[in-house]
Amino acid sequence: MPEKVIDSFHVKRLDILDEKGDVDGALMPSLSEAYIRRMYELIVLSRTFDQFALNLQREGRLGTYASILGQEASQIGSAFAIEKTDWIFPSFREMGVYLTMGYPMHMLFQYWSGDERGISPPEGLNMFPLCIPVGTQIPHAVGAAMAAKYRKDNLAVVTYFGDGGTSKGDFHEGFNMAGVFRLPVVFICQNNQWAISVPREKQTASKTLAQKAYAYGFEGVQVDGNDVFAVYKATADAVKKAMDGGGPTLIECFPFRMSDHTTADEAARYRTKEEVEAWKPKDPLLRLKLFMEKNGLWTEKYEKDVEEEAKTTVSTAVKVAEATEPPKPEDMFTFTYEALTSRQKKQLTQIIHKL
Ligand SMILES: Cc1ncc(C[n+]2csc(CCOP(=O)(O)OP(=O)(O)O)c2C)c(N)n1
Ligand SMILES: [Mg+2]
Image 1 (cartoon, protein in one colour):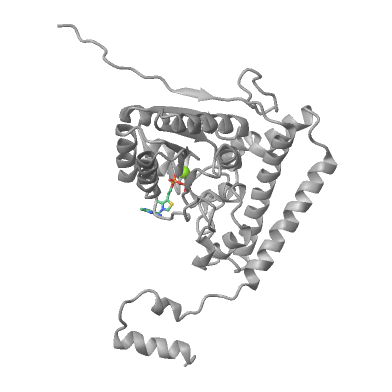
Image 2 (spheres, rainbow, N blue to C red; image 1 turned 90 degrees about the horizontal axis):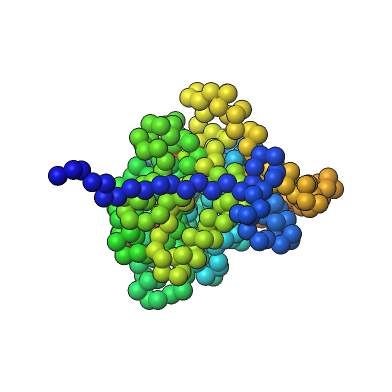
């Protein structure tokens, strides 16, 4: 008997906005000028937030922080395609998504300064707290999508994770269940080429991360992660498909982690200057700016105004966060243990009476 090919697959890659600021007119989604300006303003706001956070950390006013520099188009582009009624399960690097969805900025500063009250999403904002354990948000999102399908809720569930997250068992278990039950979930992998010091080629032998979806019976697509329009379109299509009963989609965004892994890391020790330099012309903000300039949506005054407003917004949020009374150390005992040991009782007394 001759061997037969019983299955094959291909991976689509979506690019709309190039490095010169030109778009593919056939693929460009129909977006109003005001909408495009809002995208730009949120990219600037997120980048400003990021810069403030890095500075505050260096001054000892914030704890370890994970920068989003270079990943703004992946985050803001996708978040613009998510409805307020959808549910979002982020990883730890989605500050741009939080800000686009309207998460109070001062709470993010509160969280990164070690106050967990900063990451209790306000009522009405369908976002889960950021997730530090790599990949564990994936099965949570799949469970929520299962519930949505069961209850016939008209919504999609969107979850974010990194290239490193695709090596976790949570990823494979979540993907399997999403595929088998054709759940309304959109998986957004921000393949920023690095998982701390592990480069993409040591993460997997697969040619793309997008193709991993095919093993679980659904579509994976790769998108230029520095292209806000391509990320927006891929996410909008996947959200619509999920809500129309078409099942899950994996979107592999292809940006670059321009910064260190976190402020506790020093990327220069494991990656070359040349690699970082090569990504600079691909910058998502620069590219959108060029597009807007070519289309009469950008002037130097507009840029200055947007930057000034972002700085004011961010510094106000810092002030609000820093004016918040810190949590009481004794709460650690009140909410952690059912019953205190005699040693803990002694420690608690010492804290209360400042002994
Ligand atoms: C379960 C678990 N193992 C290890 C870690 C330590 N850790 C934090 S981030 C990270 C790498 C994540 O890489 P990736 O998924 O590519 O996300 P990125 O940091 O690039 O956004 C690791 C191993 C962790 N937080 N959780
Ligand atoms: Mg990564």
